[in-house]
Image 1 (cartoon, rainbow, N blue to C red):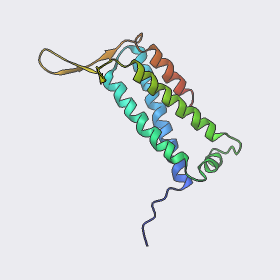
Image 2 (cartoon, one colour):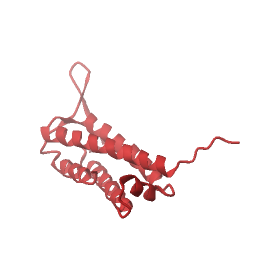
Image 3 (cartoon, helix red, strand yellow):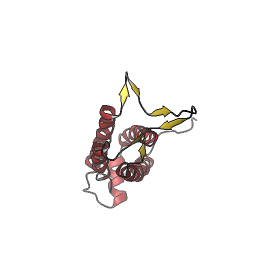
Length: 147
């Protein structure tokens, strides 16, 4: 007999919930960094890696049979539109991603994320709050989709 590897509705829901909590916390941190003018390219790229990984896993887990019904039961609200709430969060993640792809400094398809210091060490680019105002708007919209 083979070892079972299928994902249950309960596992799928708690995976989505865990990622949503991570995104909520990381998004709050990104907003604070961006508003302070101390947000570096490394901060943004690390955040984008989290979003890409989380969104992929959440999409996969949202397709598990019974996950919506389990989620409604887990939160104690059988009429809650869990699919709509997830869709809003996923769309907001896409909007953050889209804004960064459009606005992150790049040349010839390569991101301009670091510079060399005179001693040869690298310094991550740091962005002003004004430069990241559109990013902040997208982050706040994403944060509003996660209770």
